[in-house]
Image (cartoon, rainbow, N blue to C red; front, side, top):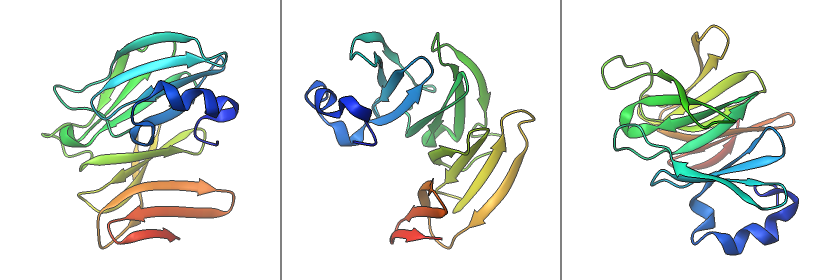
Length: 168
């Protein structure tokens, strides 16, 4: 229910593989669904499809997406890249990272505290925080194995590593 909101029962039949979609709430009561192939769509709160498109970096599909303000941030592990899209137009606005500059190392899971972007880097086994105003990056946590996902739920910080799910 949390992933799909109040209309969760209506969304389930719309998608062939609902568990593999990344879902994020957008401004104006819309919801973005992104599949690992890059196929994406936006539904209104009334469950009307208002946009369909593809989110890819080069030929790589995304791992995760999160909305901060009027921007959608999408991770592309195979490209070591995070792209920022305009949440209204879904046009690419900014790229951070690439195979050449090593800003990220297989960025996958994304989260936000409302202002900053929290990035799980599975290859470098760390979580980094990107200030979305200054684009500075700081190391937040280091692990001894790949980290794939991070969420903060109230006072709890939870991570998914290769070996399991843990409360930090």
